[in-house]
Image 1 (cartoon, one colour):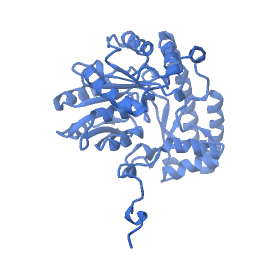
Image 2 (tube, one colour; image 1 turned 90 degrees about the vertical axis):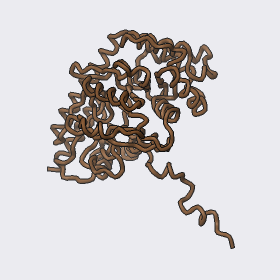
Image 3 (spheres, helix red, strand yellow; image 1 turned 90 degrees about the horizontal axis):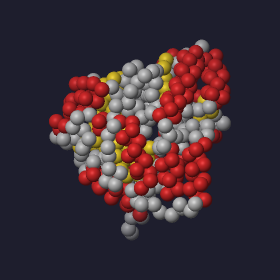
Image 4 (tube, helix red, strand yellow; image 1 turned 45 degrees about the horizontal axis):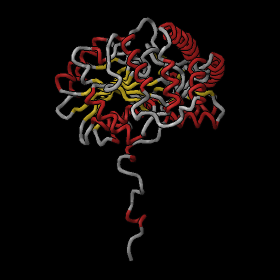
Length: 399
């Protein structure tokens, strides 16, 4: 008698790639927050309205019947607006016809980029802790992630460790600055070392810049592609999600040299065909906002960062002060917990505040994140104040 299909497929129907990573812990924590009616300081999305101008532009665009497929790699209006922004902000001229690809969020931009440039067996360097998609994306490409540690509390990396990570097998390095989850902003000296190593080893740099305008304490964002010798080998992944508080629109874009862009566009075309046409038209309007918008944005988040830092420290957490993005990494050691996942679930179910366990930002075999959790502060002050009140309960229970 022949074996059943289940006998033959002893590992079930999951592919070998899919078995190497879990579902998103961040999104899982949002579901746990809902189940326990907890305040969601886990997933990084605002609970306040997007700018009125961008919302009105979206409504107008839909009513004007921009509801069918756009050009696969993005509407001309949006690509032109992005090119204008790049020139205004960084003094660099890019060709919107040959160097930009509009994607379904930075998430798709990253996987399209990797699938378009990485071969099975290649090595990709990732700074750890990392945004959880990076490791999974590299595995989906059949490549091998190589990790370089960002050491708390400053989250600087070892020069020697980075140099040692590069080899003849290295195809690319992923840099996220401003960084999620740490809030680190890579400085010029660090970026120059990365650039030197990329040039020496003929390696691509994939620069996730989604938080480029969310900066604090006069910190400056330096795009890696503005450094000498890096324009032709750097791929910048970006989005309107964080800058304009429209995370659900899923409008991202990838900027790269023409030859690389041609490859990315092919993958993007067969992966998603294209991003939402009316929202692309509306996003183009947002890129017309003046510099005062970005200054106000940074100030808006700076106030929330300082408020939550104070509340967390008052509750007993040891915190790492972010230079950019809108997350705070906090050490749970003062509370006597050795398991970040258990602590995060306790926080949601008993304290009523949802967070992300730090281990989700580290490779599965690492223990480095077991003492860390991540809070996000892209919330209304009312939300943060309510969370601070609940955190007082945590302090009472753990002393």
